[in-house]
Image 1 (cartoon, rainbow, N blue to C red):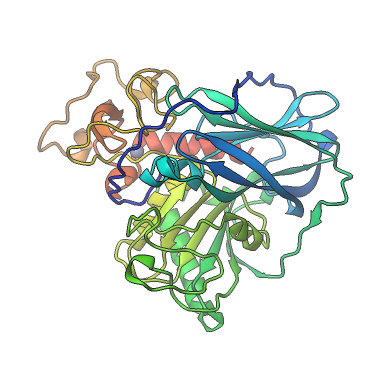
Image 2 (cartoon, rainbow, N blue to C red):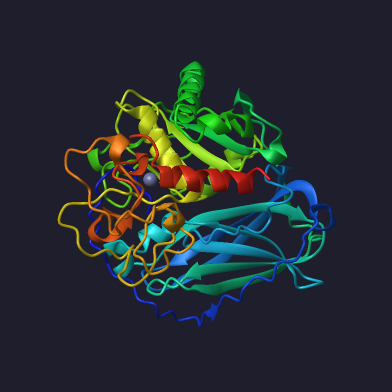
Amino acid sequence: MRRLFLILAMAAAITSCSTTRKAESAEAIVQHDVNYSDYFTDKTMRYDFHHAGNSVNEFYYFDKLIREGEWAGSLISLINPFDYGEQHFRIIDAASGNVIYKNNYCTLFNEWQTTPEAAVTARAFPESVIFPEPKNDFIIEFYARNKQSKVWEKKESHKISVNDYNIYPGHSSYENIEIHIGGDIAHSLDIVLLPDGFTATEREKFVAACKMWSDALFSYAPFTQNKHRINVRAVWAPSQESGISKPGTGEWKNTLLGSRFFTFNSERYQMTEEFQKVRDVAAAAPYESIFILTNTDKYGGGGIYNFYGLGSAGKTGRTGEVYVHEFGHSLMGLGDEYIEIGNTVSALYPEGVEPWEANLTRFVDFNGKWEKMIAEDTPVPTPRIEGSTEKEWKIGAYEGGGYLEKGVFRGWPECMMKALTDFCPVCQDAITRYLDYICK
Ligand SMILES: [Zn+2]
């Protein structure tokens, strides 16, 4: 749970691993050489569904399929090798049984499952995934991590005929604005910025906020060095009313994407639960990563891996840093490296289970993270020497991270994911490797 730099002391309703539907464990993906043009058209397919359940159960209810615009992802990187996120889905060619596409993500539903409400109420959240449009009949499978062991379990499987006349055509008439074009679509990370709470007369304000977002991103390494393979586009889509809903103080606004503060009763947690509306607007541009800019001066936002990021576009102070921090969550699921004083137990980072985030470890499975970046003479765990300057810091394993004071370790004393400073060397390395994959 990739929330804004905010303290969300959610009563950690520890979730159980039992489910009423028997879950199958995930089989390892057999890597086949997937030649893109053998299996896919150059378009995007979108699968909408409802993710429903409570703190212990989850179900997937199909809604609709939509054919959208140009596929903005890589034509080579089709099986996400990073084991990030709480969810993943696979596209399987029905004739051969081969996995031809796989991607990982997290959702707001995953976070809601840890709230007190989920212990006593069942809810459904609209969700949606996108993938290159298959040429032939296919099966989509959804997997979720077991809440305790974090092992993948198959939750749903759905066979689709590509000739089904119920597949909707895409239609998006919103204006697409280029903010920064670094490279061609297939070999770049394509980011789309969406407005919420801007009325028809506030277009220029939104465009200025998008330029500020883009400038903020490129002012931080390693994004600075990767400007040539990152594209930032905006979609202009006005709302009926100006501003953003604040339910806790009785203020409601009729906005296009339904963003609101007080998500899960946390005042500064500003998100939208209407993810399919977000996709409807995003479809006006080729995109892989979504960030929503809201028209408010109130501090708040959030970022969820491969779902979306959100930040206030008004004068909240440190706006640029907050955008980039949230983008670290939404792009590749970087974990928060800060602690909450006095916090000793977390349902998010249970003892004995390695966090899937690239920048946090519990030493259960440190291999493959930043272990190789630590010099032999650096002690692990690494003590932080009081009064030391950044020039004296070494890559190590510093205790504290993932909201916990003890038991979770980070690689550097300070970071964008901790205190809104520069990204630490561990995060920079992880981001660069992720960009290498996306831009292949
Ligand atoms: Zn970091």
